Image (tube, rainbow, N blue to C red):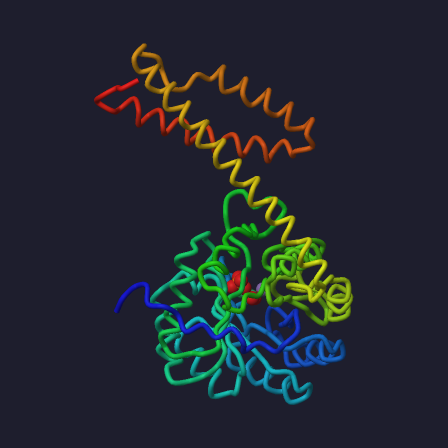
Length: 366
Ligand code: PEP
Ligand code: MN
């Protein structure tokens, strides 16, 4: 089968109106905790699906690993009491079978499982011929191919309601987050699979309660379709992920604080003005491309010139002087220092590579 067989993306299966919200505890710990959390979430009238993990993939042994099938029965009770559809994480074929037997409405593949093609294939095989919605979390490593690969395996099982969940990436420099958001990767997924419903999981990105509001807002501003946020009847006493869980009431407040902006506007004047501004941006981008091409053409000449005079490519003092002078002018123009230094580094890397190519050419024609 061809590797780039197109996916049968069905973009219209989420209910209308944003954001689509999945919430509930990291883990179903006891029947009472599961049901109380579900009841208090139901009272918010802003939640679409109740979640709770029953098989918990823990990075290190010796931590709470979930209630297993007993927890599925608590989820079903929560659904009976609140009317909310239920979802849980599956990591193998036996989990899928147990969920389908119990009447779980929706499944998700956890980050660690997404990174294992064997496990994902086993899940896909167990789902063949069954039409249950499945969300696929990104793998812990910033590897878009692995994420898309897992979605493709499920798609080839004939599932018509697929979605993705962006839960951040486990990288060396995570900044203030538990898992660095690396928004570019989520945006790239949207570009590769347009129309695929994409949720954000700010809880696992942040790892603490304080940053969740900000990350959830950013996700909506990037046109994500919804949120998966962990909530617990008594977060501080949670058996897993205690620091990042909110009470249902705090979640209600957080959702109420979100600004849900429209994807477009019916206002003709707005559309026209936006069009005009976009044309200006297009034209400036075109200028930037020309300038970059002109700069690289000069770099190429310098490379040939250095080669003729047997001079090294990298001259550190020159590079330091560039960074210093450009940073000064950038800040006087109101541009971020970090942004300008990142941009210059990128340009410089390309310039060095170009000069290397010139240096290694056999013929010099300058
Ligand atoms: C979870 O949702 O509780 C979970 C384990 O998430 P992740 O797979 O993103 O780590
Ligand atoms: Mn969790």
